[in-house]
Amino acid sequence: MAKMLDGPVPNGARSVSWPWYHHTLTTELTVDARKLLEQYSKILPEDVESHIYRIRDKAWGVFPWPCVGEFWFLCFGLAKHPLYHTMVLPRLKSGDSLLDLGACLGQDLRKCVFDGAPPDRLYASDLFAEYEDLSYELWRDRDTFPNHFLADDVLSDNGSFMQGNLMMNLGPGQTDMIVINMFLHLFDYSNQLKVATRILRLLSPKPGSIILGSQAGVVEPIEQPLKPPFDKTEDGRKRTIFRHSPESFIQMWEDAGKAAGVPLRPITCEFQKPEATEASAAGVDTGLEAEEKKPFTADDLFSKEPLTRPKVLVQSAPETGRLHFSVIRS
Image 1 (spheres, helix red, strand yellow):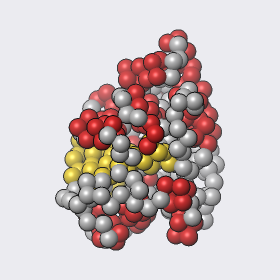
Image 2 (cartoon, rainbow, N blue to C red):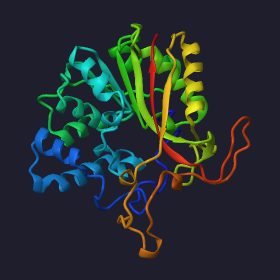
Image 3 (tube, one colour):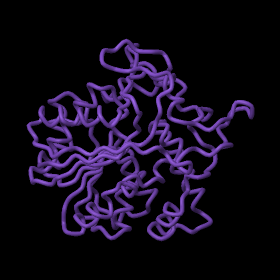
Image 4 (cartoon, helix red, strand yellow):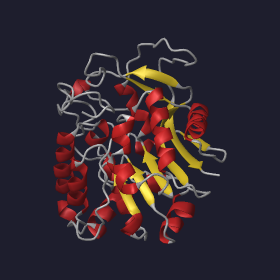
């Protein structure tokens, strides 16, 4: 089992009574998502919702990520990045390559193609090989979208990583742009630093090569333990996730650049509080009793138990938002 998960799916994690398993679509099916499914995937308007539910439940069976339960594969995170229209799309149209790391069902890459990018140099990678077929099933483009899915574990031991799909089939220093949306915040600090260093080694040595994306952030950095069912590793150790402020996130990338021997321009990282439309809508059918229902937020995944860690400010209720960032090679 991949080291990033430290064991099999925890008991009870696939229950559809967890608050992050949304039984009905509300704000998740945006105008953009429906447009792609109808115009790009050629799904009839009356079939869109049933199609989404069917694919979501298959993905939930692969691994019950909260983001899968919440239909995040309908959210085009890359298109919301400030550099999407001014840098990413123009460079794709001029022939640059792009790797989406932690691609899930390939939604960001399909959005790029829908917006005019050629698909030939678009690559996707995720831990689960099953996502490749599911992405084709969701977007119905097996005959037109290249088979550029590279299942890999970025936290495997060094020997396995060097012999894995990313290094063997894509190669170190071969990618002009790397996208990591809502990905690094799955790990504790030491593993985030390890992943960041490996991502830098995949990046092209050309000046201007870029890593960009977004992730959940907080005003003050904090390492927090998770609540059940993801609270422990297979051997019983407490699982934690490091939640970054813009300052701590920039510092981590600076440290990763030094470790990888990659010179970087000043790193940009903007903290953006979520808009009301990005939150789960009140009254979402979670499968719980009526008096227990409430809008689910990311904070519901974390224990409020303090951790004794040096140089980490622990808050009982961190102020959360979205970090949009870009890491550019000088």
